[in-house]
Length: 354
Image (tube, rainbow, N blue to C red; front, side, top):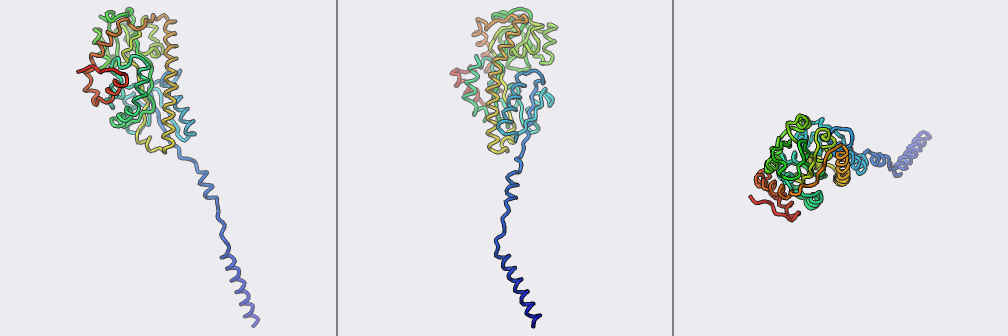
């Protein structure tokens, strides 16, 4: 009987223990939640290529440094911009293709290299589209959404910035060009751009399309009598050593968009998209302000180096009339006229009729 009572007592105690354990509320651990909160944010890589060699701050270098700074600040380092300068990933048109294929995510290029992929952008290349930097600012300010839509539709690209490097001025070695008549008999190097070639032909001189890499030698060896480029490029590439005169024509403003792959951009979280768009606008503003100073400084340095600088020709309206007469030849190449028509409306001008 004692053994039975002992067994009963043990069973009773065990039942109490089980009941006690079952009745207690389990402790809820907060550790997993804490660990999840501490999980690192996903990082994104943005490959950014351009054609300007690294070194002293040129326009592309200045822009890219500012853009990277703004992206780091606005995304807290969540987006890492990897820079590939100096054309190490290929020429501008090649890199645009790589951006389209998301091999590279972004690039900044001369707008004439974008027109191959987005014909509507050819409106920027028409001679005397802009007569001042203020014209450019006004056009961009009123047409950002339209430009972005056309770039997306035609090339699968989103624009983050629209930069400018001021006007391409005429730089000669044979003699000063003060009027359009002074161009007669001169051979001027131009890019292999049909619109620029047509403009110089309209002025009764001989345009010579020569690769940029060969231009200095062509001027130095007097294969051509001069070339045209922004003041910044003329000084940076030491044309003051082989030329003597510069005339401030306003037939073409250098324009360069920074573009990004659409799919890559739209896969980003909304807050990072917003941050990158804001970084692009901030870098654009800073870069364009920098260009105004760099242009003025380059012009001063050229004068100190012995270049005779002439302002706009007294007869520049004649230059503009002749150059704009070639516009209708290129309307078919531009295709959809919506961008060109919108530019004209913004500027309060009429485009030449076919």
